[in-house]
Image (cartoon, rainbow, N blue to C red; front, side, top):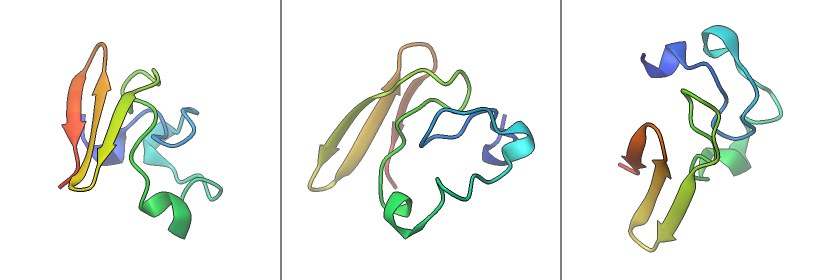
Length: 67
């Protein structure tokens, strides 16, 4: 599953069929925030932010890190 096919919004956890945008979730403020929900299952992520970036871990789908 690619980012364009994600089933859930990473900022609010609501279902987004086909990767449809949520105008309230995609704004300049949230563009810099790490994800809070898993795109595959909408579970809350364990997020750790450091000066060098962030890591987010889903209990079912593993870890994601900033670029």
